[in-house]
Image (cartoon, rainbow, N blue to C red; front, side, top):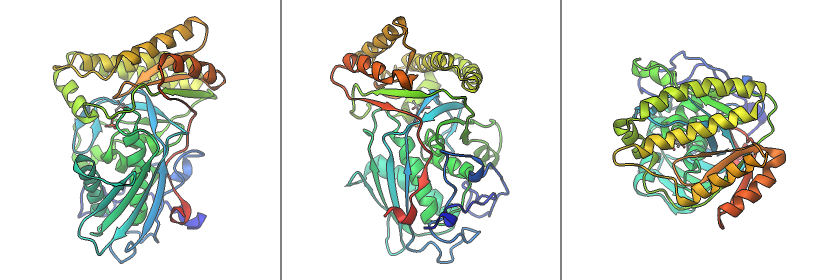
Length: 393
Ligand code: PMV
């Protein structure tokens, strides 16, 4: 695929919520306006028909995309609409430069069903259902009925609270949009990725990204259009995230189920959501002035608050393990020793420690000792999701 074809961007996006209408007329920042590290444009693996309509353009098309996970510094926890995957609060993340997911989508007009292979094994159960539902959405937008063959390779331990669904659905959104000939802006791709997994909306972008919750009480189309991620301006922070894997096994409760239970039953949920809105405002200001200490302090309190909401759910959801707390102790000790280090945890026991890149080796050594044999990785800010040229070959 030539560079020129990769740069195809259109500002009128196909509607991803309804099948019968054409472009909605919604506009967003084009990929071209996003800058380095963001998605490299949207992208048809096949010539863009301009309508997404079936003219044979997508038949047999192949597209391969790569995306990286992101770690939220202001967490997404709680949906206001499960079908559209609309969050209750804005969230903010850093995309990593490690653990990419590579996904290949090939249209298979002759096939009667989608074939999905994850890490070399046929997908089944809930994982398969989610991907087929996502492909249905893409087919609906592209007005192309063909089934697809999806092959995805994750380099991050799946289901361990390490954002594998973020890189997974961001890569799938970009590859499926390419294969089906949907020409979306980066904003449109972010909305599409959101439907697979909320956090995936942020992995469309490199560096720091904010995912807007959008306004409640709108009709379906307006609500869908209002919720997308975009890059966040930051000063030179030179950040690193040290990832301590204390348990790489799959989580006992899915984030989807845990969020629902927290929103429905935790008396701490609404106070956390309110404080998270303030956290976001303060963090954006700190990012802009390059104040990593304030960014770290806000990230740690926001994550601990999120886990507090879960612990207060009925019955409680507890992702934090004894080893998690040991690593948190090590992070507190680093601070007492004068090293800037702040922890965040997602839907799993693993800990990500924000620090300066210059101090990342020292932080990693302290965390490795505390993690008692668990793997430790150092990540910097990574790139946005993108199509690989020539179908990844
Ligand atoms: O996108 P999901 O359903 O995997 O939810 C992810 C939620 C957290 O990782 C816990 C927080 C976040 O904002 O990424």
